[in-house]
Each structure stands twice: as structure tokens, then as C-alpha cells.
Length: 176
Image 1: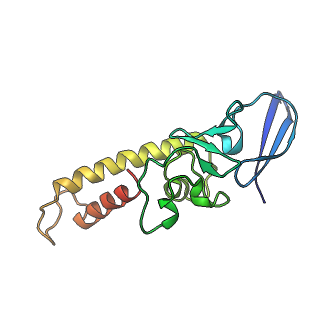
Image 2: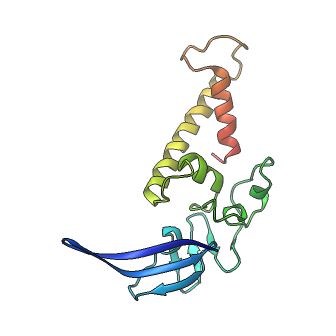
């Protein structure tokens, strides 16, 4: 199954020509390539180390031949999502429908940040990840502040206490 095709484009005024193309299987192995432009940013726009034969995904290295990371996942995983408990799987073993650009929690980056439909541009992911990290830090702070708040009592900041605590728990479950 082919998952991704990437093109390198040489742009000239009023003219755009495709100089190189790469075709990959679902796990990032090159099936077909045209052109010879040097390029380290390959499968899903990730950095490839030709000396190691591995992709660098920030938290750890990924081997496309095995579909596994070379080191353990720094996140604990989620008992409700069994595939996240496997410490070496790339994209929970489903690279067609998921991505794992940070080498951490694919479900969050693909579904929550990217909405499952935005292109997987590193800048979009990085901005989404940073925003999520900030929002989760705020939710956890507020949850600790409302830890002993009386049940059913209105929140002085206009956000329901159950929502704050639920958001903080969700962030923890997603590894934030």
C-alpha cells in the first residue's frame, strides 16, 4: 500500500517544475524515486539519516524497515487504547491513518491537533503541540486550585469545575 508521495520543486518565475519524486509504502520505505536532488526531509517531511537508515522524530529514532522505534516510548500509554501501550510501535501500528512526528503520542497529534484532516506540516504540528501544552498546563493548574472546591458550587471564573478537572485528566492521559 502506498501512503505518501513527496516532490521537490524547483520554482522559477512563472514556471514550476517537479525535479524529484519519492513514493513510499505506509511505513516510510522508498518504493520509487526519480531525480537526484540531495534531500534529508523525506517520508512525511521528517529528517532521514542515510548513515543510520533511520528517521529522526525528535524524541527518538524510527526504523522504517521494522516499523518500530529504536528506543522506548517516553509516554506511559493509555490503558483504554491498547496500541499505545506498545513502547516501540510507530503510529500505534497504523501509519496509514495516524502519524507520530514527535516519537511520542500519535493519537493526540493526528486527531486533536490536526483534526485528522489538516496537512501534516511540521509548523502546524509544532504550533498545535505548543498550544496544547500551554492549555494543558493551565487546566492542570486550575484543577489543582479547584481540588477542594465544593461539589456543585459555581466557579468564580465562569468555567465549570467539572470541565476544568476533566480537561486536566484528559491532558494527563494524553501525556501532557
